[in-house]
Length: 257
Image (cartoon, one colour):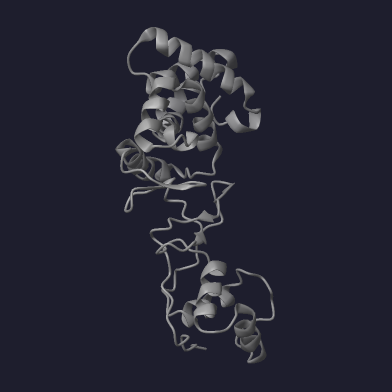
């Protein structure tokens, strides 16, 4: 059965989940999600199932909002790893919080030049973050890497261990704020690209070499990504990364060694 859309339209923010949208759409029309869905169940239009992502429930809200047939189809996991539900870019949502899942986007809204982590910040003074985000989307997404995968988490820890303090201080001065995960984002993306590169994984998974030796090689390769010049600096960074890799659980780095 085709439902007529509710009288007052509600614009959907890209990536917004059904719960967030349904609440907003019902409120704009002077009612609630519960009242609408109870009425649809009584009319036999919506199944009695309370499953939040029941196909018929999703389709009903698409029709009530006059939305495309593919919205709310966001995958809950990719590559066996849950896709994080998070607050989307506030500028994209006209200043109002929108919650959803967008695995194809990292921690930067390129359109509005904003960091969309726990705190949303303007990053116009940090163009390297936008460059990193473009690399994330062009390379890592095709490798089924999203912000919730162990590869990104391990890359973040290793970037944090190996990045030069002077780099952090210089970026913090430009940003006007010391948001650590934001400041190391370029290095995090670069390391994630390195360790998920098929040729790199083939080399370090060569069982002809002991695991310790392979882990040491990983650390040195990461240090080269962080510090392209200066052997002594790279060596110190590699030592710090090596210690970080040792702290990571076997589960988190099994795809590396």
